[in-house]
Length: 193
Image (cartoon, rainbow, N blue to C red; front, side):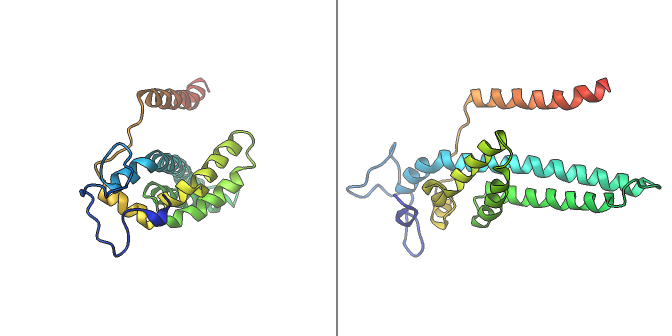
């Protein structure tokens, strides 16, 4: 079913609690909107997860920019006269990434263009950057990605707030292990040095 054929749309009256019409195939039962939401839910969640990564990156750049600005202001003999300008640029970059993250998390169509631009640049970061950026481009340009960013799908989400993606316990364990290693990689050198 393409995004043009989604059961929720423009001027049509749609009852999300109505029984499926004759001849409709229902995945796991439910209304047409529920069927559609379940069909695209994993893709929706993956796209929103990328938004979470952008949020973390944006917060990091923003904090670095704020501390750099504070350091530039308090330094009476600046080593580099461009430091204040670089610090402000980092704050602007961080704020932009945070806004982009919220656009992705809310599946806003405008967020696709900057994500594509950043992903194309990220392709040069071989091998990890290339893999992650290629995956992001797949999420954006695939037919499911086009559907997830459509106005019709936004109506489906509004009609099915009770359907949520459930992350597996193994995914949570892997995430916390990764964050623990990342934190240790930051804290241990600070304690040793």
